[in-house]
Length: 371
Image (cartoon, rainbow, N blue to C red; front, side, top):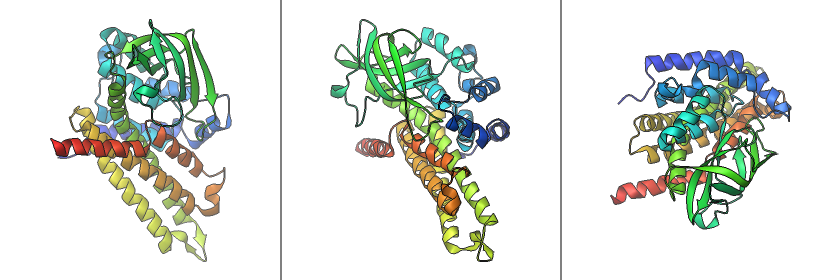
């Protein structure tokens, strides 16, 4: 079975790289990083919407392009390579995918066209602080269609228009769509390692909430949503990891020490080789995940966990080793290494830590072996 991109998908990927090369150079990322008043780059968001990327996997009847998930993976890989400072993941990988998979016809009609047009930004509000969230520890509550509670941290929560919120209702966990621009919602932007992907504390006090999916299915739905998002995030991480390797290689070939390029030293060769191997392992797992996601295969939970683990490790390792290859320059503000190191840390936690995904993978493998 061939898991590689088709010719059309490779063309889309190449065009996305050219587009982002012109619209999202490091200066754009730094512009958001240096400005505390900006949480993302609005002109880039509008340009991406014009390209149709926000609706790549959304059906044409809802204003999207109606492409497959593999095409969305190709776009995600290029966004990761450019460390694009936009809330693409929260909106497309999570909100749009959740509504397409679990929303009613009315919810799809209300949300998906606005996502495709770039008019609506999404967020996933599950966590309530440090530690794993369990049904007994879930404090956010919905009573009479009104939500009360606190969610922290919420990626892109300070700029989102609609959030998917995990909350209890009648003693059972459920998922709810909440308009963050309406009454009963208070937002507080928090400091984070990567300000180009902002996080916030959301406080709800009687905010209107509309159930997404069935009653009492909250935790199962969250896991299903994260399985889908994990594959797409893995491609973002893969794109970032590949760029880190390229940056390290380019610097090593142009930097001289003791009369020779540092790429000729064995220690540098080993670093580059190790980065390459981890990236290729992540790529194979990501491609398998893309197949499972596109075909909605029963192997998706296992494939998603494997892709997420391999990509998280590859991106973090590549970002870290790229700094080391750059030597003293790698630690400076002027060099772009820190942009990728920040994003590698942010992406590894945005949809569950690698530790949680390792537990998920072991659990799925145990189920398979017991069957």
